Image 1 (tube, helix red, strand yellow):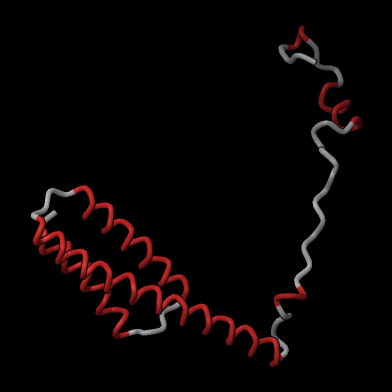
Image 2: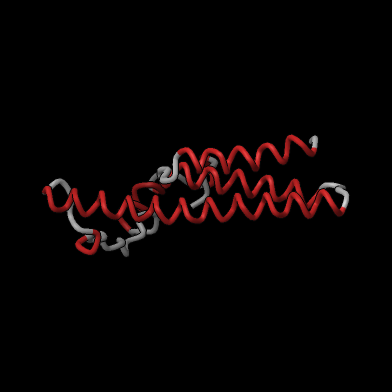
Length: 128
């Protein structure tokens, strides 16, 4: 990849986060993945020392902007969730009840196992 393209991609992330300072958490996650891919590409390339130092500065600016935006996005999600709770559209997160896991393994339960193996033997191609 051309070095100006790599730099432009970092700058595009910075510009997007400047335009939309509080993205959705989904978009922040997508930007995180994008920056991670750019970092891998930066680390794998053959760059001059001068260019590499300049790219590290741009990279650092992009990551700082993303971390700030991610914190704002998560805070906005918490506020929206609490507003939904106050309005009666949702339950508070601490009231979430998880269903207990079933301890029955249905594949080894006797009645089902008997049904699955009844009338089937080695002569029919299915071992017991």
